[in-house]
Image (cartoon, rainbow, N blue to C red; front, side, top):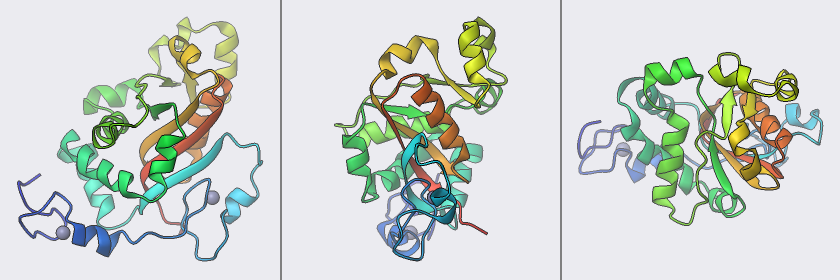
Length: 229
Ligand SMILES: [Zn+2]
Ligand SMILES: [Zn+2]
């Protein structure tokens, strides 16, 4: 990240993302309550969410931006090129979304969507956890983060150490609550944090695992939501 210039328009002196670019490319828009897909009409749910089971595990999802220029490029730089220094300016976008203060106020824990151990080892950091830490630095009254509340199944090395009953439960999804954290989740309200939501399936699966572990409510906050084709 170059010092002192906006990484979108090149103006300086500026933040990594200048206010002008946030206004130009980040105009707030109507979004589906539960998956953050953009909506053109004054409905609260998109077509896909209208047909879903109303008892679905994820009751709310807020996206700051569309997954489109320039945010897709900046998120790729965060994950693949420049490293965790992008967490702060991107978390700033998340914290500026109009619904974010209410999400933070109504949550007991911030939980990052985990990477697989292989991905974590090759990248060296979980971008979702970097966003949690940056959000807490920007909003000191944010709820605390719980870095390892969820494990990604499939290649989770500690899967064999889980009790048999829990292993069977895990077959329903790609995630499980970490046994060490179940007591902290019981009856609590969780805000899942991730960089991008594509269909919402990952967030729903993670939310399902948290609800299975006893969380009372699960909401989600992402930088960007992909656009429907
Ligand atoms: Zn700019
Ligand atoms: Zn939806």
